[in-house]
Length: 381
Ligand SMILES: Nc1ncnc2c1ncn2[C@@H]1O[C@H](COP(=O)(O)OP(=O)(O)O)[C@@H](O)[C@H]1O
Ligand SMILES: [Mg+2]
Image 1 (cartoon, rainbow, N blue to C red):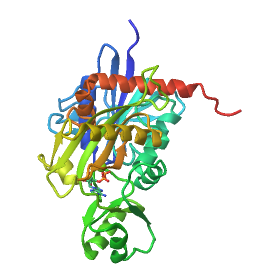
Image 2: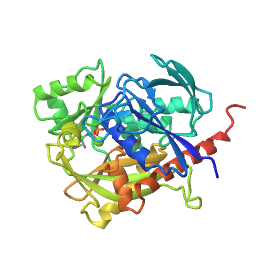
Image 3: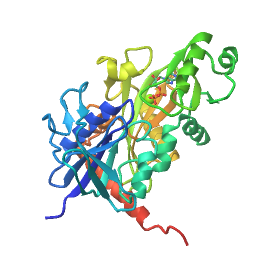
Image 4: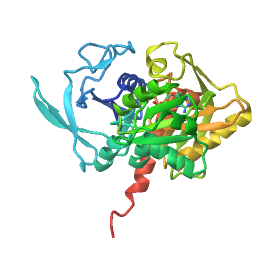
């Protein structure tokens, strides 16, 4: 029998979506076809420590994921072993267990699925580390991850590609804060204020008054050194999943494809952090979105262009607004979208005929496909 592919599931991390990531990892772990793959769970705690457990069965208190059936209490077992990834070791992950059962050794993996969201995971940092370590990994590379995380650079590239984006302006830390009146004249009211590099709606505000405006800017600068001021786009929120290789073509079947379109219906003023994660009924997911076929087609086309514009790879979820007149505006791309069984990304593929475990299969294939393409490149003259 063929050797099984060892899949490192890298999850958790220093982000507001730590728990979502734990749930995604648990779902991926359970869905991996054991005839083909051998999963290795590597969790990153909220302090950034990499942890691993040889007892990766779930549920039991002595195990790696505690309270894994409870989305609110799920957490990494803090007494797990510490591990470190040593760059240039071709997939070797060093094992440095401290504490009472002192031991060391190596774990090897053939491919890593980094299910990490937001800064320190979706932004190219972890992707860079994996690249240095010469390990194939699922999803966008360093460049697309970094650009996809930075709403300022992302939107400038969209604009350059002629994609429809709303008006925006950027403030750097240290810039003079413009008058609210000037901003209203330029962008209209209300205005959206958000950190350039964040996610989960953390630090995002919708403001109508000068006081709220100043407060929102201060708040957004708590999270980043760049802040976006954006025109408010009134409309419905649509999302579309993209799957494929930046280097693929229809002959090899790895070409970039877009899924059915879904709609997010937030029951709050906007799709805020609370609506996403706190309020269980904060938002409804409608799949497929109840929109005209032309609009869905336009969303799918734009999704592929967004993916290509940022040189994405593997997967991405593209988020849009649809205005009352039916026109579509691109909001953002998430290069590592939520990946629990009930998340929009896999749900949209399910609606398009690709099951959760088939999707994981594809993503692993695509990771290896890219790795093989890049392996042949010269690193100098
Ligand atoms: N310019 C805008 N106009 C209307 N709603 C917006 C705008 N920007 C953000 N929102 C609302 O805020 C939510 C979060 O903003 P988003 O830019 O998607 O940040 P994040 O990366 O944190 O998801 C969106 O899903 C939407 O509900
Ligand atoms: Mg968003």
